[in-house]
Image (cartoon, rainbow, N blue to C red):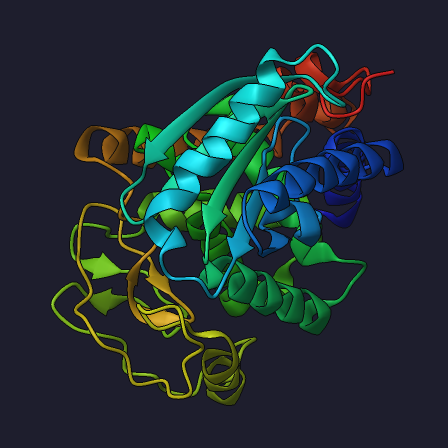
Length: 351
């Protein structure tokens, strides 16, 4: 496409991103909610509480949740922490004098970890215990964003791709058998890894994302930063040469941030366990035995693949329309997102 057409499409997409990216008000409100929940958790037992995920990475959507994890050296809390935290949150829910409105407190036994989920002032809060992996992932993605630069193009692209997946296609959400946020971030990172020289902006990243992953042979291969690999094998970590992330960079991040099953920082890139293949297989850049796509069930796999293909074809047609229609057609491509957040009003930063 010609530069003028791309510039117009990217500029209009940039206006949408300003409506859905973090703002000072959303940052302040989320920080206040996180601090409040942290104080409640610390009433239950002696611990340190950290925020991880999209909030500190600043890639959350207006409807995104807050991820907190509590750390304690008291191993007996591994079994009791969830009941203790749920009890204090339910007490806040009943209290008329609570600092914030707490609702819908739930205990969820997820695939790997226990989670306490609740709603605090219209923001979903997920609480876990001793989950070091989330903090390590945060550090890794921050390093990648700094490496890419270009006014946080990586983070802005994550926000746009998440918005399309969540609002337009409804394919984001591990707890619904759909794509997890970290899996999606890794797919976006792969696009930067391979196509970084030709990426002009977040819309260009989304276009490459949809085009590439709608044609990827998920039935035969895992997706990894070391290239597509047969499902029966593990990555052969060769240096990428012209690729964005070198083997040295990835190995250094793995040594610094990989977490062993017992929760300790891993001092070696040699991993235990076997990669468990499912339907949409994505290798964790920090731990090659971890399948980030394990949450996707068979029915949703076909739904996701079809959504990628439909999105790629639709966006390709839009970008070939007359120049004067580009902005309107781009708006239609993100119709649900504009309808929900075009006004600038946010559920996580009420006026």
